[in-house]
Length: 414
Image 1 (cartoon, rainbow, N blue to C red):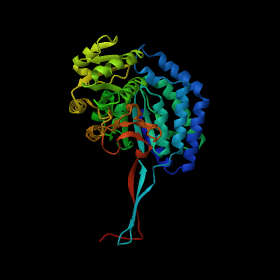
Image 2 (image 1 turned 45 degrees about the vertical axis):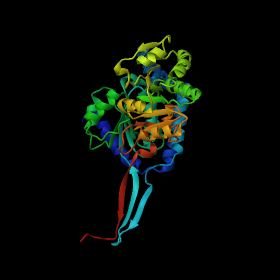
Image 3 (image 1 turned 180 degrees about the horizontal axis):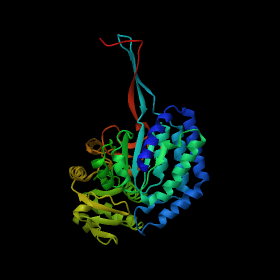
Image 4 (image 1 turned 60 degrees about the horizontal axis):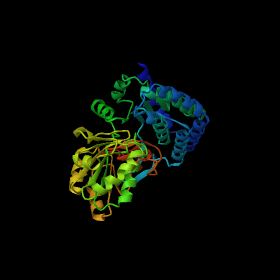
């Protein structure tokens, strides 16, 4: 048996015992993990520095990889929040007695073993482990080589806390970062219940196309902000800037700005100095390019720039004729992640919210809120852009399935 296959089997066996672990023990374990993370922050940051040192200058993934004191505290806070959320498993959904006396109960149940394949972001290691433990699922973590030092220290800490609380450490295992590992994950249908890829669109599509294990897609985010002709200009400017610059390397950041032609001259003129202060690169189609002329970080857009996830301080800008034009553009280029309209016209805003097919649609707010923490769900594994089982922030509440429990007194079927 290979090393990867052995780790997969160990996690499968450990996940069975986790289902019998008292809820109080799991809560205590997560609280201890949060405290241990803060106490061992120096060790984690030292490992993270080794990973950062290998990055090329200007790599947009660097921000995703970076940990610092503030982010460590945020991760610990998130773990504590998850510890306080109710366990989604074992809830009674339905109960009835059949005419033959059989007692039927439908209850939620853990998925079993969750496999995660992700890039760069070491906070995901803690997020997934915490969510899986809280919902009594085992988890297999396949991080990227970029974050390997950080991930190894993170999992070492998690397993140490598990052992201290009498929980089998093999409930959480880190797989080797080499690409060959994924091949064994894809075929482990006996041991893994679901695979969740989190990262670039290329990674997600590769997993979806090759895995025999069921996949929940956490899609790349090509997010639009549409400034409709009846938008409040000040609100629209604030929302646009926030959606682009507050953290440009994440999936809920704005990638394309659509502006109604009726207000484009005024809006784009006022946007220029705001974007300039952050040095936002703008690629614009001809109408927008003409209105933005003189902006120092302006380039002409290629067709491929619309539908591109920039993951940096860059975005595409287009002037549209009306809401019909905007909706058509979004239908063509959206990855169904997060889309926003800014408008004072309730009828137009409501139409946008109904028609746009995305996991999260916004009226008069930044797309940056698409996040498990912001939605009050605790940490998340990712943002699901598919429609089966989970959509939007894929958090604790969705790490479950259902099972029928049937209690009898000797009944047999005629």
